Length: 255
Image: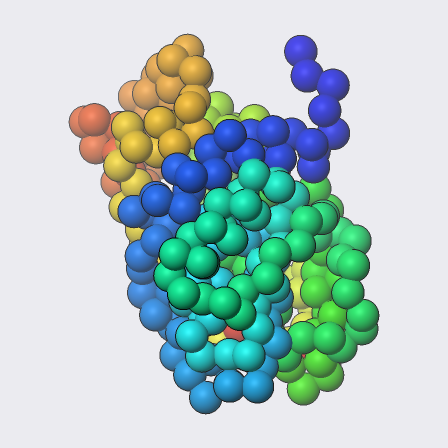
């Protein structure tokens, strides 16, 4: 039994797997990264904050185009891996800072762009984190939130949350687009664009990256075999357990 709070659990889960996430094929490529790079192509003077930076791939995508990127994460090990990879790539304008997204150690209006990729489903308090994101972004700045999302329909949502939690006990929830829009509005953001995509997840690398115990990996496979045809079809569950997830890139500006 664990006695860790949510933030400690996230750090404990991801710290030992830092290098795996830096090297992850799933996380290191994608049209969403190209979209981020395009958004910052003409922002040479911009300061960018990458919330829950993980393996640093969003930071790596925008760093060549901006003045500075602060890669922010709970895990010191993850930040050390990001710093090492940034140095290897010659990206001297990436700085790292450790902390929780619900309490940012930055001044109001400090950043031109606040972004996050594949992190919000681990946040212990989505509303508090979005409030903080709104506080530290400039009044004429932008925010970009990229994550896997719930389809919204209860039967599909339950399946998604179940196998995410079996794989990783630090998982909180994948929000639907409607839920995320409501949370952004409450924090003082206006959604300006939403880009919807699907990503393929190869089962074995997915569980290996998190070092998921065999009993939990088998639980995922058991649930995959037993859920409704509708769920298997929506997530395109293959015979080897591989599947597809819905993702969204949500662009927003301060109200």
